[in-house]
Amino acid sequence: MPIESLIEYFNRHLTLSDEEVSFIEKVFTTRQIKRRQFILQEGDVCKLNTFVVEGCLKMYYVDENAKEHNLQFAIEDWWIGDIGSFHSGEPSKLYIEAIEPSTILQIKKEDQNRMFVEFPKFNRIFRVITENALVSSQRRIIQNSSSNAEERYIDFMKRYPSLFNRISNVQIASYLGVTPEFLSTIRKRMTKA
Amino acid sequence: MPIESLIEYFNRHLTLSDEEVSFIEKVFTTRQIKRRQFILQEGDVCKLNTFVVEGCLKMYYVDENAKEHNLQFAIEDWWIGDIGSFHSGEPSKLYIEAIEPSTILQIKKEDQNRMFVEFPKFNRIFRVITENALVSSQRRIIQNSSSNAEERYIDFMKRYPSLFNRISNVQIASYLGVTPEFLSTIRKRMTKA
DNA sequence: ATTCTTTCTTAAGCTACCTTATAGGTAGAC
DNA sequence: GTCTACCTATAAGGTAGCTTAAGAAAGAAT
Image (tube, rainbow over all chains, first blue to last red; front, side, top):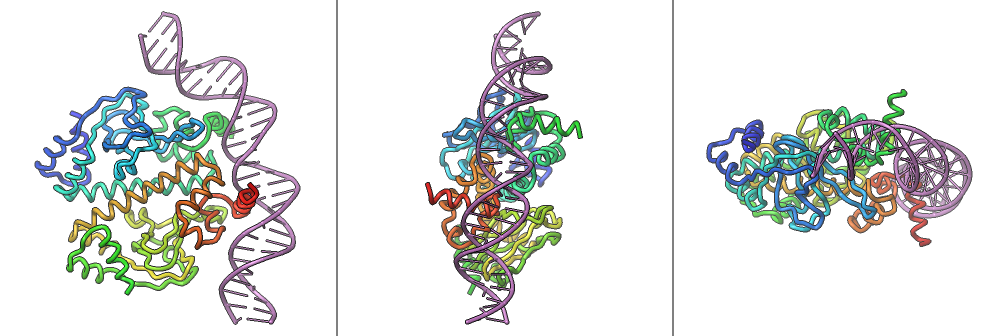
C-alpha cells in the first residue's frame, strides 16, 4: 500500500500514535500519474501538497521565450508543490509534471491545516522539512552566482547521484541553468581533461 | 525597549499570553552592533537566531576569489541567521555583518527549542516565516536563470524599495550577482532609454 | 579643513555561455 | 517491429557580463 511509505517516512522523524496514523490514512489520496502528466499547471491554484511514493516529477517555470527552468525534482520520499500558491491561494506560475510514471499521495490544504491544529507535532516536522528545503535553495543561489556551469554540474552529480543516474541531460541542463548544447560541450571537455 | 518591537511583531501573527510574553522577555538578549561588525563569521557555528529591531545587516558568502555574494539583507522586523548551521551544528560558510549601526535581539538554539516545546504555537509562526523565506528564495532562483541583470535590478527596486533607498549599489550588485562596474553601466543605459 | 576610505563611473579587451543549425542515436508508443 | 519523438553531439558565430585600470565624487575620520 502506497500510504505505508508515508507512515514509514513520518516514523523516521517521530513516533505516530494510532490516531495519527488513521488520520493520515484518511486524508491522503493515492494517485497514479503517467509520464508527461501534469499535477499543476501555470494559472492553477496549488491546492494539494504531494508526497512521492514511486517515480519522479519536476517542478519548473516557463519564461516568456517558452523556455523551461527546472526548480526542483522529486523522487521517492520527497515532497513537491508550489508552497507560495498553496498558502496564498494565488494562481501558480509553475508546472509540476511527471518525468516517470509515478505513484503519489496528496493532501488538501484544509486537511493539512486540520492536521496542524489537531496534531501539533506535525508543525514541527513540516517546519524542519521546510527549513531543509530553504537551506538547499540558499545553497543553490550561492552556487549559481559563485560557480561556473562545469562546477555546478559536478556538484549536482555528487549531491544527487540517484537523480543523476535517472534523468536526462536535458533535465539536468535546465536545472543547472544552461542549454543542453552547452552541457554537452562541458561533458566533452570533462572526458578530455 | 527593543523587546517591545518583537512582542508587537509576534502579536501581528497571533495573540501572546502573559506567560509567553515573559518567556520571550527572558530568552531574547538585546545587542547593539556597530557598522561593519560581524555577528557570524565563516567557520563559526551559528548558535543564535537574530531579529532586527533597528538597522540593517547582510548575510553573504565569500568565494575562493575572495568575492562576496550577498544572500540576504535584513532590516527592521526581519530575521537573519544561517539556518543550516543553526540546525546541523556544523560550521557556517557565511558571514553576517552590519551595514548600519543596528539593534538586534538574539535567542539561543536551546531556548528556541524550549520555546517550541513549551509553547507549540511558535512552531506555526516559524513554519510560516520559513515558508515565506523559501518562496522568496525559489523566486530568486527562477529569476536569476530567466532574467538578465537589468530586469533583476528593476525587480529588486520594485520589490524592496525600502532596501533600495538605503543600501549602496555595491551591495545591490553583490545581491544581483553582477559586478558593481556592470551595474553602473546598466544604470547608465537605463537613464538613456 | 584635510586626509583617508569608499562609492560610482567609464572604457577596452576578454570569456563563458547562448543561438542556430545539422545529424546520428535511443527509447516510447502503437 | 516500426515509427516517431526525443535526446545527444558538434561547430560557427554572437552577446552578456567580467576583468582590469583609472579617475571623479562623496562620505567618514582625525
